[in-house]
Image (tube, rainbow, N blue to C red; front, side):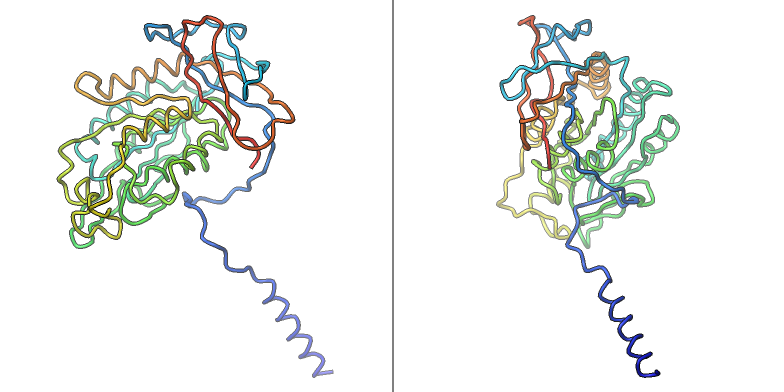
Length: 356
């Protein structure tokens, strides 16, 4: 009996070892929060957020469903859901670039951002979160209606301390590292957009918008620009970009100068021959593809004034919905939203993804 007993124990041990999980391939960047199951679903309805302006740029907010014409891939669609801004909750995300290139403009961004959220968010209806990104992406405050919590998150914003020995820096935000994703040195703009859309916005209902304050330079992201845009589109999220560039930062070690290859920067420096991307064009592409706008801070267009324009636009939005054709198929589908009044200009996303 004893040999059989030991044989049984050996057999059970081998079975347990065989059931141990195998090593998984490298995962996409995450905010390191408790995982939630994802459910693959076919598109049942498509939601479109739209802003309408006259030829002078004035926002028109008194239109009805019958004033709009909607097409998908050139085929007319029936609008079966229509609402104005006041009827739809808002889910807002603020993404703030805290890389060294933003160190001189961060105070202006911080104060303007809090004033904007304080005026925009409606009590017991709207929610907002705050993310900062530099060499890491960190969720400083999850969705909340609380003004004090949002203010505390904005107050914690700071640029990383430059370390000349490594070309990198210490923690980029004032947070404790909760919900962070780090990729060494750089400015993880695309990763920040991807994570905000995929891990936060995709789980929300209602109107969804991201506001990005940055100079538009990405350096070191794991995700591509195309993937970041697609993820925001799949999450039905409009992106407003505020280009806030500090020209004097170009000579700062590890900032713009460092990204042109001026020394070793923690493995993240660009080759001196590599041309720096046009941040303005990148932000224009992100915003246009998602139905938002790109704004550029200048002496005439201050960040406070830009926030007022975004607030006005969000207050004048329309939310429309339709059910696509059953045989539309998976992939990207073009959307064309116009009004019957030809002189009016509609700002909305130009498509959506169905299926996987």
